Length: 136
Image (cartoon, rainbow, N blue to C red):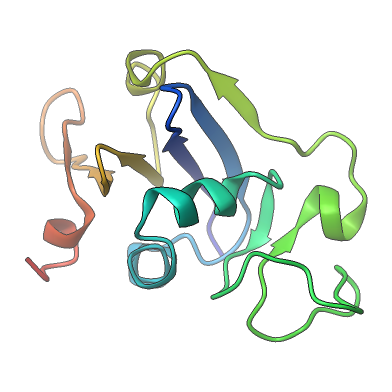
């Protein structure tokens, strides 16, 4: 299992960054982000609860859902579902602040789409996630 960071540029221009522990490979989380969180509202909802253990189709919390007793099809969050107080993520003032530090497995919601750093190019320029997955 690999780890990743997910950055979402909010409607107010600030960027909410969260950590995700599992499934960060582009063929897993990349596809899930495109499939389930491909609007501004859904992207912001995904990161609002903070750091994630796993991404799933729904980011709300159904009755009985927790880290120890997860309900299938729902995201698992460290703070909300595991009660980890230090799992809110981080807020940046701008995408410029975020782009200067992108490394490793990273997803960025910006300007109405998901972006992926192309590590084969100098200074890790971003490409649309759909292109990185070969679906555009």
